[in-house]
Image (cartoon, rainbow, N blue to C red; front, side, top):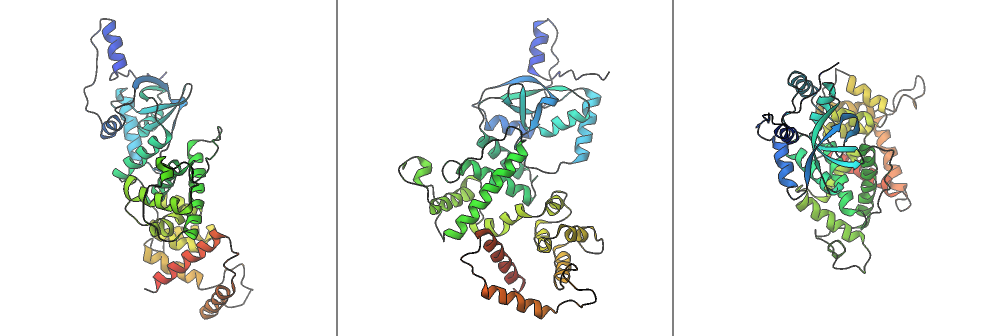
Length: 367
């Protein structure tokens, strides 16, 4: 039978030791940087120490897709050797007896690897989804833990909390879905809304609409109000500082990449800029083949060159046996004809936006 942790740094055990006449063993280790941030951020909220079962706790609103396996193993080794967790994770109760960890997820995972079955944690009360998402996104950005794809997911999930009920309808909560699945649904709703706004609204100045402040409750939300508010959030609340064009052209396409590309970005096999070029291949098998090809440099230049080579010919499925690849000029002429004859008014907005994105990329290639 494995030895259970003794939890000697918690205030709970210190109090129990004092009440029984024992000398309490209480660690005076300084708080970790994350613990200090959490306590400062939610200093006005009630919190207490509780003992949680590790099979009754889950990560919530953790936007970082990749964790350092060496860090996890080293921390688990410390737990196994000392039976002490020097810094307690922070949780909220999302159902009776079931908890969501929003601070110290690495410690939870390491405790599981160390075969712990329970541990103590700080339980916070009355924290909203909006507060938890904003905290998690901000902390990970400060620690530079997020790749561009994770950062975009976090941004869109935070935008959902600011826009829901005013500019977009709420997404029903599926009790069977975990938090990551719920976030993916929210991200898709916001992405579609942003594309629709981009097609409907021209240039506007950032600002907070009266509907948001509550000063005007008799008007309906307009697309212009929505765009103004998003610009305000990007430049102030989120501290992003980038433009509407950057959001629409550079960030939104990331969350529509094939799963193989998203996994490659998360594993740091490829940069987001390189992934944009690979996404032009569309077919996941061809994308995977380029990623696995050791002859192709995984730099933006190397990937762009290989993608150009692949796109310069017709696909093997459409090429007749023995027929040479179509000339490049023929391909250009065919595309030009389709662009001239396409009815842009009847085309779905998302498809039209994707084509416009490709046109912008093409223009940049000639610069």
